[in-house]
Amino acid sequence: MYVSPHIFREYDIRGNAETDLTDPVVRAIGQAFGTRMKRKGAKTVSVGGDVRHSTERIRAALTEGLLSTGLDVIRLEVVPTPMLYWSLHRFDLDGGIMVTGSHNPKEMNGLKLAEKEGTLYGEDIQEIFNMILTEDFLREDPPGQTADRKITDEYIQMLLSKVTLGPRKLKIVTDSGNGTGGYPSTAFLEGLGCEVIPLFEEPDGDFPNHHPDPQKRENLAALVAAVREHGADAGIAFDGDADRLGVVDERGEMVWGDILMALFWRKIMPLYPGSEAIVEVKCSQALVDEILSLGGHPLFWKSGHSLIKAKMKEIGAVFAGELSGHFFFADEYFGFDDGFYAAGRLLRILSHSEQTLSEMLASVPAYYSTAEIRIPCPDEEKFSVVDEIRRKALEDHEAITVDGVRILYDGG
Image (tube, rainbow, N blue to C red; front, top):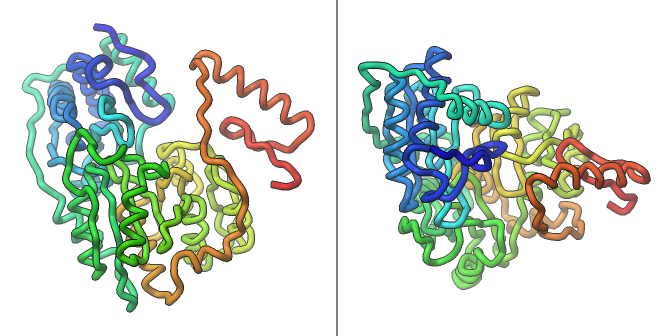
């Protein structure tokens, strides 16, 4: 059995569903993760999956591998990733695995691995790979047992217990991109008292309307048009597994993740004065300036949801986010990335103000910035290229080198 080392990424396992994530490979991933968990004393994990056509096959092979190690498995219905994370709290589980390709093309799929302590990344994911190479697996007879649980409605009620809106009635357009976010987002926002105009809420693994990545402008065209047509207060788009979101204001203008973070910090920092605030290295100087103006202490950190969550736990941070639209609230929530809850927190701010979203954001410092530009570079050359850029940058400029190179110029 060939196992591609390239599918074991920094903070998840990801590859082509048919050529990389074959049944034997996925079964072995289940055996490795199950063995790791059993050696830690674990008894039960959950398994969830998204709407992709390959997901059910992958879930079945994964579950077979987990059961073979003696772990019991709770099988969830088709769920968004935050619902899988929440299942660990709901059932007091030792871990869980979400089968999802997130925002990637439909022929791709992947696995997000979680323990009670947080999602696996870095060396822990490489450990799974090495265990597969050496077939370092426990084999229990009899195997573990399975139980099916449906948790969607209970999850929505949990969200409604966490967020209450103010007196302003809001009209919101949502775009779930035919991913997992359709029913939960509509039920949650209507439960909050919003008028909801949903787009593309029917699950469809072909993603027929647009690619499920809300951080690319071309994927928000229908959302922008609907916000303008209906005179909505905002538009909210979810990625394929709904652990992150994209936002457009009442004019249909895209609001980047770092600008949303500035808005969230305005409400959070006064309650936690002088907080250390994690800033993902991709974020603009506008967020840094806003944190400083609020009396906070910016701390630059690496990109990646698992890396951010681990750093939050390390320093006891109450909130963080990524430019890509992952938001992690640990002040009133569980600290994992949840697109629905983040939407609720944004709407709570809007509902307590007579200002429009664009008016609220007008006072955030404006900086010119390019969208993310991805330059093709072979994996084996990436680190040497970054090392050379770092060396050149540090000759003449201050630079942040915690993850790649962020060069600080006098003008920004």
